[in-house]
Length: 189
Image (cartoon, rainbow, N blue to C red; front, side, top):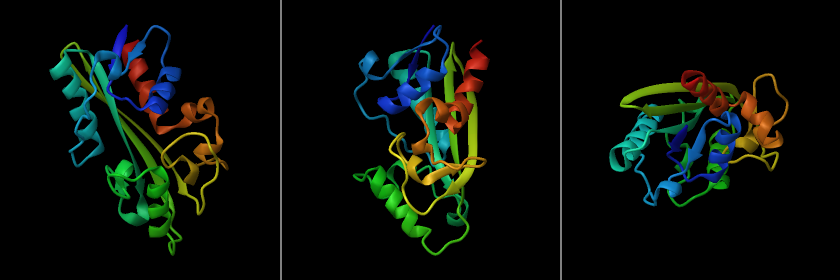
C-alpha cells in the first residue's frame, strides 16, 4: 500500500517509515510534486493535521495522512501548543524556540509538559484521527544531539534521558508520534 505522508520534514518521514510495516510505503509531498507550503492556519493541533491531509486529498487526489505535533507546557497554559514550530517567530529555528521556552520557564518550578501528535488519515473517502500523547517534563538545559525540535529539553516520564539522547529507534517506541502511528498501523492492518 502506498500512502502520501503530507510532509517534507525528512526527520519526521524517517521516524514514521521506521514505525510502519514494509507493506506500507510512504510518499512525501515532494514525491507527488507538491512543493508549496501547506498552510497551517488552524488553532488546534487536530485542525492543522486535518487541513494538511485534506489539502493533499483535495488538490492531488491521494489517500494520505498528515500529522501535527505540539509541545504543551502546563505552567504556560499549554503553550507553545499549536505554535510549537514557530514559537520564537516565523523565521526562527528549533534552538530559538527552545531558548524562548526555557526563558519563559526560568523562575518556574512546574516543568510538567506533554508532546501531543494528531494524525489525520484520509483513506477511500473517510477521515480518521489518531492521537498520541507522552507526558514528561522540560529540563533546564539542552542535552543530546539526536532528534529534532524540542527533543534536547524534554524528558519523558519514567526516563532519565532527553529525547535527543535516545536513538531514533528508542524514541520511536515511546514517543507521541510513535503512539499515534501505532494506532494508524493497527487501523490499517
